[in-house]
Amino acid sequence: MPNMRRAVNWAKRSFPLDLDEFKHLTAEAIPMHLKHWWFALGGTPLYLFVVQAMTGIILTFYYSPSPGTAYQSVAHITNEVRFGWYIRSVHHWAANLMVLAVLMHVVRVFFTRAYRKPREMNWMFGVAILLTVFTFGFTGYSLVYEQLSYWAAVVGTNIAEATPVVGHMMARFIRGGDEVGANTLTRFFVLHIGVLPTVMVILLGFHVLQIRLHGVHFDVAIHADADLDEGDEEEAGKTFPFFPDHVMTELIIGMTLTILLTVLALIAPAPLGQMADPNVTPEHIKPEWYFFPMFRWLKLTSFTVGVLGAMVFVTIFLFWPVVDRLLERAFPNKHATVWIGIVGVLILIAFTIWELFV
Amino acid sequence: MIFGVLVSYATAASYGLQFLFPRRERRTPQRVYITSRTHLEEEGAKKFRDLRGHDVVLVQTAGGLRAISTTCTHLGCHVYWEPEHNRFFCPCHNAVFDVDGNVVVGPPPRPLQQYAVEEDEGSIFVMLDA
Image 1: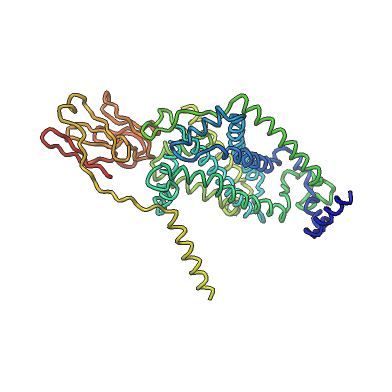
Image 2: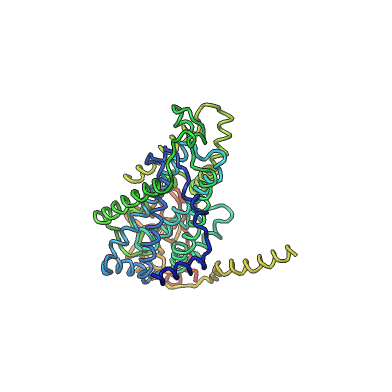
């Protein structure tokens, strides 16, 4: 015991921190409306990101990022490494669920207008996180080096090449040359396991910091019956503590997700198609489901219009808090944002279903 | 002072960026023997690979011999020569090119790339990029 006390004292001397000073970090009052599941959609992708980091690191022990060995190493993980199929399937499904969770989070934030003053910048951080998640999906999918993933890389980098002015330079940078090959695979690997996780951690840091600085968004419209304004909830006693209550809720969601991922891995393990062949484009080529709207859009328009249209959409989406303010001034009390949001979501769903079945 | 420090950092960063951008490949066309006139007439069309390993189709058209790349000008997918329809078909976005490589249907912005073809005493040569 004296040894234990000595060790504790040594640790305290090494880290002379007053833990009481940090208690306020976990003592944040959370508004009651966060008890609704759709307000916990921000924590869900965060948990899935941790799952992705852990399973991704494990997969890296066996994966080999070169055209000659990439597919074989994935096949080796899937068929020969102990629990390889499980780790790969959890990584595969967590990626899909992460995209879904981030999209649902964005939809919730959009329709509750949580991006309004003073949270405009946090909306932009959120959109940047969404784009990073898409890039994660694109680079990760391409690493498998099967037929569909190889052609997804070809199509994806050619879309980037169509960007005005900087497109060609950007495509050469992404591919590491004029076409998808060994350099591309190495670059995608570095992006997927090094650059993007770093970017994601920085973006998530800013995103969470802004939530802490501004407090959790309080939608007056939702609480119209309660006759409360933002900031009144705490006084009215309609809050609950972040720790342990909210942390426990997130842990339960995390456990549920872990069970769900395991069930999905058992029912539908991550598929592995034919090895990539640069001279054979599969007859029915399709990207991952979250790129279906873009893929369908490119079928409906000319190439330049398609790429420019997508860029305009992303730019408007990024600066939506500004657009929303302009719309509100031009059409007061007409709920223009809600109607545009509904039409936008319906179009995206329609394009996804269209691409899925045609 | 600050300006000098910034310029120094920018110079160092520019070297890092150059490292990430690969050198442009020098392309000198090479004259490559593909087939003989007799064989081409027997087969109707001749598929071969360019110096980067991509398929090229040699076909006889009304306008003469054509060596047409099978890389779609839309998003880089592999197009297929369909001799029964006398056309090229891209499965990615259902684009169709005619026997001369011109766009008939679909979103491709320009015709398929063509290589110069030369015929010399019954032997057919194509000028391929190295």
